[in-house]
Image (cartoon, rainbow, N blue to C red; front, side, top):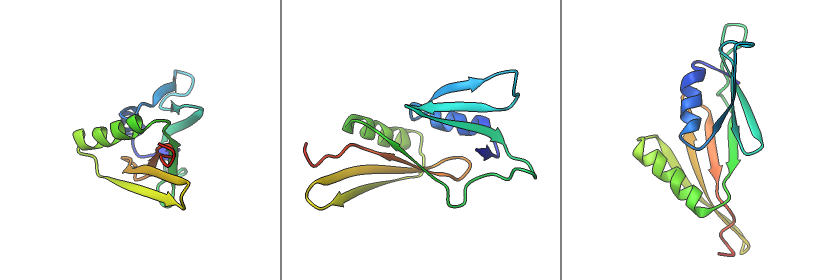
Length: 118
């Protein structure tokens, strides 16, 4: 993903538990981060490769309510603009989502587990 500052972007994702997947001399300035099985490559944008942001949305699954609460706490403590949404689907689906905008302007959604059975 081409971004204006790949290091700021990586630091943003680290706040939410992403880990470094790659940074090496083979590809200077290219970074990769991981969340579960998802790996995102980050590279500085250029005139040939403009930054992604418009219409791009990432959504990552959280497995526990505690992870959702931690995500909200990180946003509050770091004073990050965020939105908490409760999504209801009939009688068998209820989840909490947290939307945060990354430094490059990407909407990042963290989706909690189905709480209807809890």
